[in-house]
Image 1 (cartoon, rainbow, N blue to C red):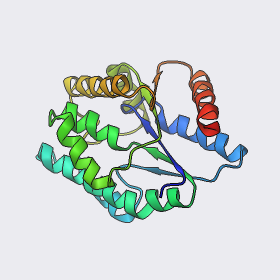
Image 2 (cartoon, rainbow, N blue to C red):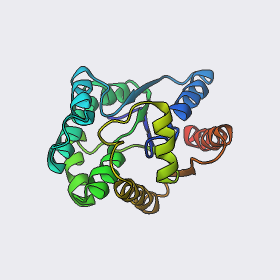
Image 3 (spheres, rainbow, N blue to C red):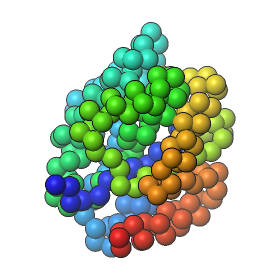
Length: 208
């Protein structure tokens, strides 16, 4: 039985997930909560290999279904090898992306459909869902400008503006459907203001 808590961070590239995850780590560490931090796709040796394959710009011919299946495969390994064992030990697991990413990117961005992606990931995770999700959203074009400044773009980051707009709509849909789980934050705000908003919600969440 799950004893710990799974917290996921979601949003488009350039939204500042990595920055806010580091601040949350410091918050948890200062309060003595046991935690681990991981990412998707990745988090395991197998997952990291699949990450390289999925994001490699050389594989532009990759089909939508192949992409969705590879993400789900990496997630299945991640859940079995890292996430579920940590939860059973009573740890808080902070994950940079989880199932919501697949719903937004493959379900909406690739137009495979939300129901298809939900079913695929329910199988991959054995029904595991985040207890809390921090969704950082900003204008897709601003996100792209930030990502371009940071590093070379990968296969997903290189997609056209229309794709990124679909992804954002998918994320908004998730936030509307599950307001109790998803904290929707404007990623265009000041970094410290965002961190304070997350800390405030986290204090309530941890007390619960």
